[in-house]
Length: 326
Image (cartoon, rainbow, N blue to C red):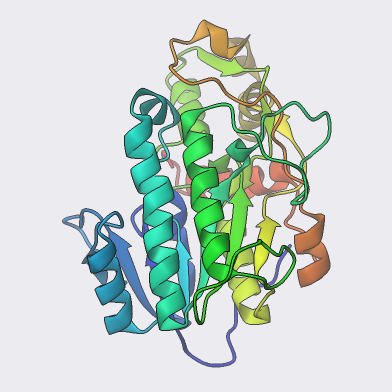
């Protein structure tokens, strides 16, 4: 388990996508340890302790002016169109947000001299590998979402130039330094996700159809956020880094684990193994996109805990202790 984040001094951090699943947790974790501002396309009526600014990341002029005004030392870019099927139906919109938006943020960070941490996805891989993917493995996305996120990665690395682990063949913008972090199978509180949906359905004694033919690295946003905080402490090299809880599982296995950990053994009969062909979905998914996070463990001295232990912690703190829904 990665230790909690403790910066030696107050640092200035900007989090894009601050109302998303990962962005919310990053703001919660970092708000007491940093001078923090969050960006969101729409500001919720109920605001938390972190100041939020409404910024459209596809507006390059707005992105540049807001970053120059705030002068962050670190920018954590989580804003994205994450709906895989919506991306497949409108690939131009996905490319505009996930590719162009990342490029706008990366250029503004390079101009301002801020270190950019850009969050990407395991969906940049084709899923044909029988083993977890390393940072050096070739990419080959099978859907529009993955292609748009890969375009965002490449834009970020072009702005970073020849630093760190990977040396793109591009000249960096002045001051550019960036780290692409790939995550996988995120779950947590604050936004609906697969795990919260399983909990709600099992408690209501409704059947759960869970895909057994796709494997990734289920990851708790609390652990991923702590991992990112630890990286900021260490001032890492630029390049690409995989960050996920240890291990791999299908959604069917995760659903069964939820039932086990909630003591709902009788509800396991409600969980039905399925394939994506059983769902009316626009986008194909990579069948095996688990991530090898050895580089993160070597850099920080510790991997993230196994996914089942992380799932147990989430269910304990957000479901069992509260006696309600996550």
